[in-house]
Image (cartoon, rainbow, N blue to C red; front, side, top):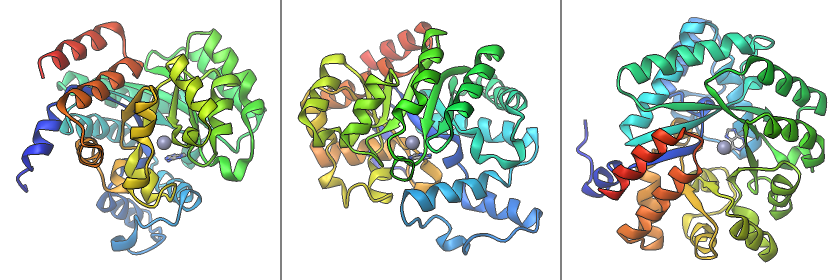
Length: 335
Ligand code: ADE
Ligand code: ZN
């Protein structure tokens, strides 16, 4: 293994949570190639360029293909275990893992079995000393109000202990303004004690972020960075203390910003918006949690106190139980 540069190694030891990361974005190219060969399926493009995406729509299509290769409960359990191992390798002490059932074609109509398989992998991981992980079950922006209501019905019937939140992801640019469509489902989920996390302000502008707060009652926003385009939305986030799960490399790779120097994360932070740093889809985007922290540290000249503050936000913003949060905060105070 390559020796790790000192700054990355030090950041790896910074106690923190990851709050915006998708199971669908954690497959590496070799595994996908192996699975596609097993089923005699062709790859959408050669392995060398497999993870070259033309934007969010192309990326989401790729997720359908990749997740469509997963057929058995054991494979799902292994994917969940591998996520916990990846998080541990990056020094994460807890993860909120987004999982969107619509991408997994062989599993449609079998959410309880999927949750049990993921839970088995995450339980095995914890028994092996890997970090605890909560699941955020996600709707896709392009789904109907009826589908959203059915997902919430099922989640409230199952009350699966591994599920911490209702989430929504996908492409707001192709779906249009859908906050009103999902408001009822999110209201019911929140009233029943599920947390709510909402992708907005990535493929939508600041109006999507406002809808996430006002219509969907978001406890946390995934991305949210385009709030910067409307000072009133920035003020609302800061005043209400609604945290953003920011993913800098994802935003550059999927075309929201041309390069990191353009990214508004530091302006948002200086305006008092709580932000944490995350990977979104680490394997597909070729990044890691410690790398994202290091890129931001260098781009915004963060001091150790700044790093501690961002790590602290990640712990405050995560949906872990109080014991896990207390343990992470205590470890952070010793960093
Ligand atoms: N699903 C996985 N990654 C995503 C992203 N960056 N935006 C919306 N949906 C996603
Ligand atoms: Zn995301």
